[in-house]
Length: 326
Image 1: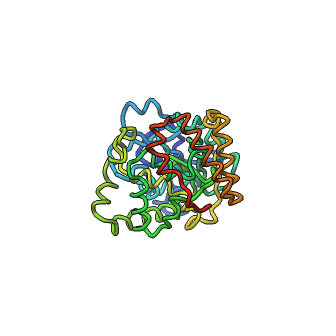
Image 2: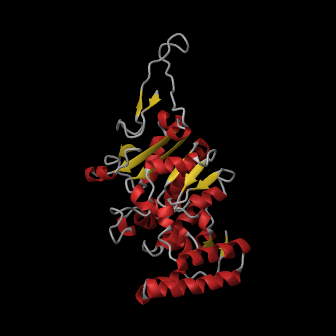
Image 3: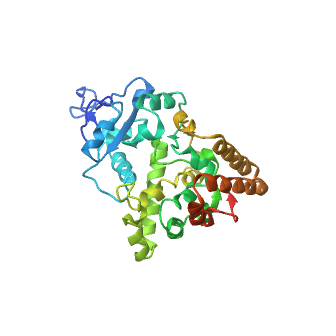
């Protein structure tokens, strides 16, 4: 089979075309795999969309993937699992499935993403974070979720306990380098073969052990009170935050590279840059004194930018004083 160049056609989740077999070498039914010679072209990058009007926002350098007829509460993770079962995807040295809003969120088009990957060859996983301000304002991505999804930490704690994950992760300080968002992953076989079963074990373990009332909430659209995510369940917001924990355990030893996003970085003001640096130094040195300085500075910044009502609602939940440096 020969992989169809990105943007050429939308022929199902694989976008592959059959190539004539060479009779006499491997039998009349054998197929030849023809991958592009250039490494950056061998990266299979899909772009997920759900509605016809979203197609106009697709990048022609990605392979369009219509997911309208595959509803699943796990969202992107279900797409990853489906693609991983396909032979054409497994043959690609690197592959990923990105959202239709990838360009708007990251400031990268397909050409820039491929160039960033080609500039750092040999990694098992490439990832990014289109929200670098969260690296400055929150000790980890779980804490940021408190401000977007009702009862988020309580539900995450229930998932962690049911799945046998360390609950301390929810209150631990992570450096900026470890934070990502939106499941913007491009990985090789070593990553996908470990990551997908590990996440599936978390989901299935939770479903088997958590209280039915909690499971009903996890599967519900209560996670999206502002209707910014098409009534999504809680699962995508939990799964997208699991990457650092995976890399600490099952994924330990994988070679990873975080792709820089200049357009997103350019939006950070001086305070956010200082806050991010302070938190990273506190993490690197395990300095609780510097962490306390960061916390005070962060709270003053949020009071000025988010307002007193926001701070009264959320600061009591995200002012973590009993913590670990992860």
